[in-house]
Image (tube, helix red, strand yellow):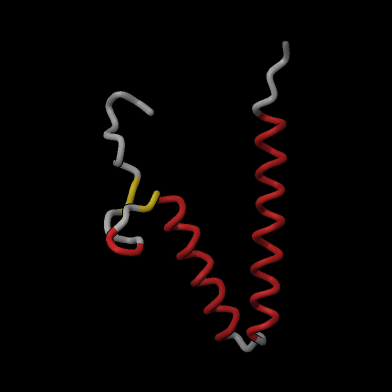
Length: 77
Protein backbone atom coordinates (compact mmCIF):
# COMPACT_ATOMS: atom_id res chain seq x y z
CA UNK A 1 0.00 0.00 0.00
CA UNK A 2 1.07 3.57 -0.52
CA UNK A 3 2.78 5.35 2.35
CA UNK A 4 0.35 8.27 2.07
CA UNK A 5 -2.84 6.24 2.35
CA UNK A 6 -3.88 4.99 5.79
CA UNK A 7 -4.05 1.22 6.07
CA UNK A 8 -7.83 1.13 6.55
CA UNK A 9 -8.73 3.92 4.13
CA UNK A 10 -10.39 1.54 1.69
CA UNK A 11 -12.64 -0.12 4.27
CA UNK A 12 -16.22 0.48 5.34
CA UNK A 13 -16.50 0.62 9.14
CA UNK A 14 -19.45 -1.08 10.79
CA UNK A 15 -20.72 -2.77 7.64
CA UNK A 16 -19.91 -6.31 8.75
CA UNK A 17 -21.34 -8.46 11.50
CA UNK A 18 -20.69 -7.09 14.99
CA UNK A 19 -19.15 -3.89 13.62
CA UNK A 20 -16.33 -5.53 11.67
CA UNK A 21 -14.76 -3.52 8.87
CA UNK A 22 -15.15 -4.70 5.28
CA UNK A 23 -13.12 -3.76 2.20
CA UNK A 24 -14.93 -1.35 -0.13
CA UNK A 25 -14.81 -3.66 -3.22
CA UNK A 26 -16.57 -6.42 -1.28
CA UNK A 27 -19.32 -4.06 -0.17
CA UNK A 28 -19.76 -2.77 -3.74
CA UNK A 29 -20.05 -6.31 -5.14
CA UNK A 30 -22.63 -7.29 -2.51
CA UNK A 31 -24.71 -4.17 -3.17
CA UNK A 32 -24.59 -4.67 -6.96
CA UNK A 33 -25.61 -8.34 -6.65
CA UNK A 34 -28.49 -7.42 -4.33
CA UNK A 35 -29.75 -4.71 -6.70
CA UNK A 36 -29.38 -7.03 -9.70
CA UNK A 37 -31.27 -9.80 -7.93
CA UNK A 38 -34.03 -7.46 -6.78
CA UNK A 39 -34.34 -5.96 -10.26
CA UNK A 40 -34.62 -9.33 -11.97
CA UNK A 41 -37.21 -10.58 -9.45
CA UNK A 42 -39.17 -7.31 -9.75
CA UNK A 43 -39.20 -7.67 -13.54
CA UNK A 44 -41.03 -10.98 -13.21
CA UNK A 45 -38.33 -13.65 -13.39
CA UNK A 46 -38.67 -16.67 -11.13
CA UNK A 47 -36.51 -16.51 -8.01
CA UNK A 48 -34.90 -19.87 -8.80
CA UNK A 49 -33.90 -18.64 -12.26
CA UNK A 50 -32.51 -15.40 -10.83
CA UNK A 51 -30.38 -17.32 -8.32
CA UNK A 52 -29.10 -19.60 -11.08
CA UNK A 53 -28.27 -16.65 -13.35
CA UNK A 54 -26.49 -14.67 -10.63
CA UNK A 55 -24.54 -17.73 -9.42
CA UNK A 56 -23.49 -18.68 -12.95
CA UNK A 57 -22.48 -15.09 -13.70
CA UNK A 58 -20.43 -14.94 -10.52
CA UNK A 59 -18.59 -18.16 -11.32
CA UNK A 60 -17.89 -17.05 -14.88
CA UNK A 61 -16.66 -13.66 -13.70
CA UNK A 62 -14.37 -15.30 -11.16
CA UNK A 63 -12.83 -17.52 -13.83
CA UNK A 64 -12.48 -14.61 -16.26
CA UNK A 65 -10.76 -12.39 -13.71
CA UNK A 66 -8.51 -15.25 -12.57
CA UNK A 67 -7.49 -15.96 -16.15
CA UNK A 68 -6.84 -12.31 -16.90
CA UNK A 69 -4.75 -11.90 -13.77
CA UNK A 70 -2.67 -14.95 -14.57
CA UNK A 71 -1.99 -13.67 -18.09
CA UNK A 72 -1.34 -10.07 -17.09
CA UNK A 73 0.91 -10.90 -14.14
CA UNK A 74 2.96 -13.54 -15.92
CA UNK A 75 6.66 -12.79 -15.53
CA UNK A 76 9.18 -13.98 -18.05
CA UNK A 77 12.47 -15.22 -16.71
